[in-house]
Image (cartoon, rainbow, N blue to C red; front, side, top):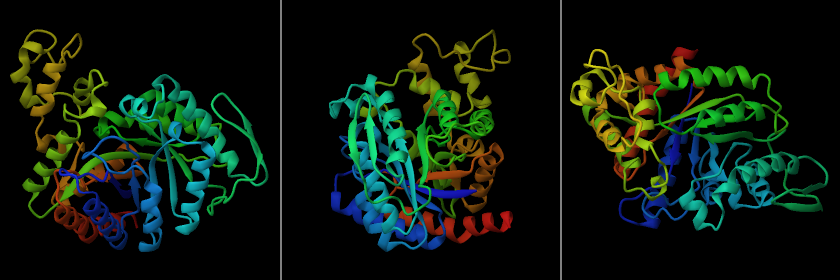
Length: 384
């Protein structure tokens, strides 16, 4: 099981310089204590929520400030960029880092897409066309292309990646249709939905079976599954769990501009977190299917029930989220137990978001140190 960190570069009060410096320190420490990768998002227009519009600039610094940790584009929003420019930037970072790049791809959400002047209805086709172009750009010799969105006359594009045949390719995925497409194209899944391992397990199994029959978009198949979650490790398990739960609820808060177009969000979150806990069913008995709590294992969240789902979402407690593996939080033993749940579900890499607007820099550094001192060595011992 690989462990990695994700960075949105958040700050509750806008302070561009401080968030850059803090993020660099966190990544350097993660490299020193044994994390396998750091992943940087690409976001635009999200003010205090995310200040990560150009990960390649951060990677330019980190390629020299770190020694072994992998540098993950998590993800490049392909519809925003000419595919030649993406291929050039990723290859350049691969050389500067000594071949440590992971190439994640995606297409963002309507709030950002419309800000960039892009029709959301075109982004799926734009993503797929760009995805098919980039591995070919990385091949030796002249590249040319005539497509719906981009046309390139014969040109020699340099540099080619240091890794051969090229860095591993991934796609950000939030739904089963994307998991299936990733398997067909032979690219890795970045499941960024923060779901319970029990919910994802059948999807992971189906992906692993399908990817064996892939027609790869590149020269190599990436058959890896990455799951994302919030994480925090501290000697005080209660403090760690509550802090991670606060990060999770803030991340999916109703005030987020990038979530405003996502209908049924809280219904989907409740389902993906493993459904309504037994200790909450009595509170929502009148909304449960069937008659009586005992006959109603699930909440009926259809038909304009967003308010009900939001209330349920807010009441699912930190302990339940940790026990289900939705969060990896608590003391080192708690974290190891939660990681084991993901491992059993078939996850290859677990990506942690620790640095959020609700967790100060010193706490993030302390949590990274705790993982490096107690969790990562134990994982390595178990896998030896």
